[in-house]
Image 1 (spheres, rainbow, N blue to C red):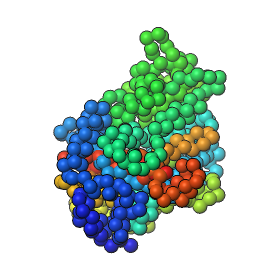
Image 2: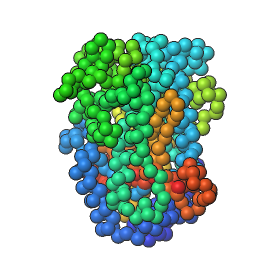
Image 3: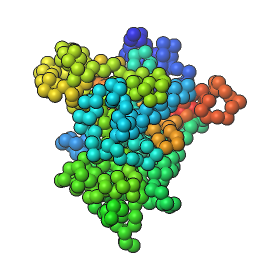
Image 4: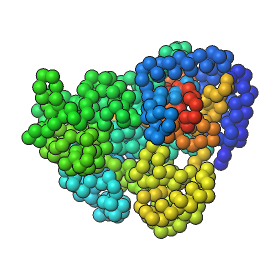
Length: 529
């Protein structure tokens, strides 16, 4: 049920703040939520000019550090500084603990699913997941059936997108199991927020997230072939024109590893080498940010200049490890998404901890008719697109747009799903000298090794900056809110226990600044101890 529309009585920048009838991250019917009390007091005492000055400082930092993203097809230029919203989003610790358990459960099930479908295929034989749906998926790699991967782990880095509905319930919107991006913005947001609002970190005991790259490097080194005691790890990027190139260079620098392009590597006798000024150097682990199709021109697209000829065969023989593994895209296929709860029950014998969004699958006859007849009410997505591409938001589309989309659906039902339009939660963003609510999502980052699942206490909250918009993707002109880890609030339930995972509040901070016609921004989220 939609929440009652609330206008707070607070003064200053929050004067007359209107929740618009949506679940608001900062305010409930009684005013600021308890874990936001200090933050609203701090921000509410600033003038518009003072807050704007902080935004300009953040903006300047973004430009000087080259924190950018690419919007393809924008006539004003493709390279843009990332809009960051300076209002932190705060997650109470009990909420974070619930999310962390659910995310760990989910990535374990997805890895078991991938190992199964590339080996015995038990879940397909038992009819839990339709065989045709999997083996005909564009990202299912038949040539890798029977191939083993280190530790039986396919997804080493996962970015799972969460939303919150009108009742405040967290729901998984999708998993990103191939080459998830955005974690560098989470890390940079934290640093920017500490520079622009240092007092927030004095008022709140904030859980750190800076160990992310150390965890990632540790996991990558564990993937090295046997006998490689001091493995060489590289990050493979498509190059400077890729939308996430800043992130690639940032992560490589933070981990102290080489950032390479396909032309920097070669394969000899099924061993991968890197060209250096001192001669060839063996490579043991490749953290690849290149999609399967472009990874090796001898196996996938022959016209690819981004990959390395022979890389796949070296991978299959166990002479080099890849993160993430090849063929993981079938696990984040949106047509497979509705079956993830069934995977959890099948492999783990557990009920799913996190809810999903009701999904209609166009390849099913009844669902196809429902989608086509109710397209004006639904969000319709292409099953293997990302970044907001191939999507129709029915309630905001014209009749002509809907009719055109319905034709595409009927022509290729396997390629589409439909979901109800969820009234996404909102968080305050700064516009024209005051705060206004904007829709947000949340992307935590999960690191998975053969022994453990690690989730740093934070994430990236993306913001639909255009009023009324539900589009948060940076590739569509969106931006971000980053999560800063975990903040300990004044009412700690376990004050005598110095264990961060038992703390009561985990705030997630938003940091960002509206730029022109951008549709999205980002918030830094921290978790309070």
